[in-house]
Amino acid sequence: MIRRLAVLSFALLITVHPASAQKGADLLWQRWQADAAARGLDLHAESQAAGADGLDLSGLHLGQSDAGGSIAVRLDHAHLSDDGAGGARLTIPAGQILNLDLNLDQAEPISATFRITGDDTSLAAPGPDAPYRLSAPALTLTLQSLSPDIAPAELTATLDVTGLTGMLAGADAAPDAPVTADLSASAVSAVIATKNPGDEHARATSIRQGDVTVSLHHDPGTASDGWTTTLDARSGAGTFSSGPDIPGTGIVPDLDASQLSGAYLVTLTPTRRETTQHFEGVRYSAALPFSPVNPVTLSADSAVFVLSEPGGSASGPQDFAFTADLKGLMPGAEIWNLFDPNGVLKRSPGALAADLAGTVMRDGAAPFLAVEPAGEIRHLSLNNLSADLAGVHLDATGQGDVTPAPDGGGPGDDMAALGIPSGRLDLHVTGFLGLLDTLSNGGSLAPERAAGLKTLLAVFARRGEDGSLTSDITLSPEDGLAINGTALR
Image (cartoon, rainbow, N blue to C red; front, top):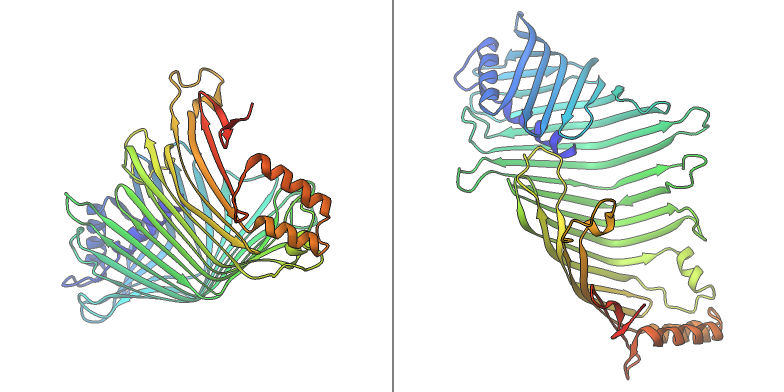
């Protein structure tokens, strides 16, 4: 759903562009409709009337349909006017209603109504071929209705944007021309809350980001290489919170998170999705059900996640890859105290890194706007998993395969339907035996418990002369699960 909304939002931007040689709001409106149709969009107004300085549009509609479903946006009112020699201005007044309708393949249709408040939003170009300038000093979207609803719960949602400005360049009469849109806002916040009848408190999820910048670039490409769309979103300090828990469930944790800065980079093609997320100065705090300590906190100096996966029309065997790199990883004092109540360990920041790759099987071509699964895993390679904390270092590598069951697993055999797994995992740990000795000598771990853990480790790991521990874990249909060559029955 999020991807589909992003596509339509971008389509709306590339539909509205300077009039070039066309003069007059009515001619400009006709040209925009023709350009929208050339891009596979439906742009029309339920009624239009000429005013003193332009054209009043009522029931403004923008929609798109394909094999994956349809999406449509409707505004009560907009005003289109001349703005200088060859220039134009589109004004969306505040205080009106926006309707959003989603009808995605294999999903229940969704209809939402929002009220727009704050200041008027304008999109203006000073002259022919000049880039459009977006301005909305203060903009608020408030959810008015949602169908299907989540009765009996009450749902409220609000989006606030402050100091929104932007630029749109490269949108001319040719639908195959590259387009770039740059947006910025001094602050963006969103709040979603649900409240069940009889509950004293609503569960709210809120996101607040400062100094937000978004850059979109769409290159239609050629018939041979296809289109490419890139999104580069960055922000300064931000927070995320969710809670309190819904009374009586004890399932969903309260969560608070913050960051000093963040970046989200996405590249889309007809067959691939490449995503990078980069955060600096992150901190998480969560109240977890059944946890012996609460809240549980975790911080990191930096966190980078990179995902490359198939998408859109990709079919057959497709490669994917995922990497994660967390530096300055620091558990909160409550976690340290749980394992080291006497404080005998050196509480230094650690690190965590992972590098995964593999192959998934996609059943067939899917429309880009369709909601489709990433695919069924057929091969997985753990190129590296490393972790450092409290003087302990872990390295792991491995690979595995999932072979489809010959008969699909049979009726009601859901596990077999997922396939037959096989593979190998190699683990190497250093410093763990020394950690047990330190905890035991410092009184944080009873000597008999330390001795019991060492005895248990001897069953599952081979000890090296340097005190390191090594385990080889294999899984096969013939021998089942085995550790260091010993089958576990």
